[in-house]
Amino acid sequence: QVQLVESGGGLMQAGSSLRLSCAASGRTSSSYATGWFRQAPGKGREFVATISASSACGTRTDYADSVQGRFTISRDNATNTVYLQMNSLEPEDTAVYYCAARSTGWVSGDPRDYAYWGQGTQVTVSS
View 1 (cartoon, helix red, strand yellow):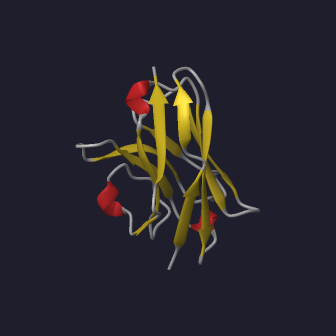
View 2 (spheres, rainbow, N blue to C red):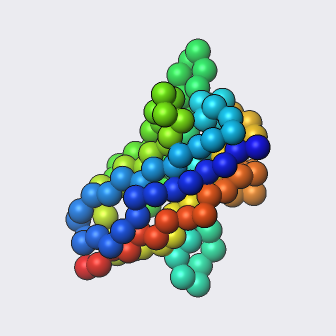
View 3 (cartoon, helix red, strand yellow):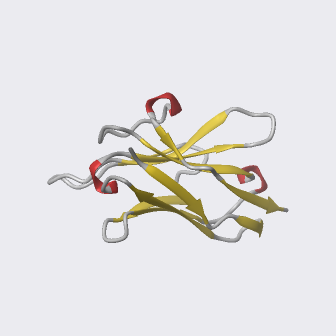
């Protein structure tokens, strides 16, 4: 079992930066893949970024095209926390952001591959 708690959301202006945190408990976060997804009002859950489990070869990250170059996913193994650094925020980034964990170490952009979910944190970007 994995428990996930997101934090760091808020009301931001376009062009600003924000960092979301996902604190994990129950299993060492470096042993499984973690993803960030978002859901805007009236829309489905959308893939944002994912990071693989840590291995001798390092880690792999993947991003949605819409956030590539603006967002960075990272993990602090010491604190069992995964971060999403969001730069150059746009009004289109407004959504509830969810952290999710897989039971395996491979990255995936499909929310159906994730077994554990946090409660979400709201990010609102004004123009």
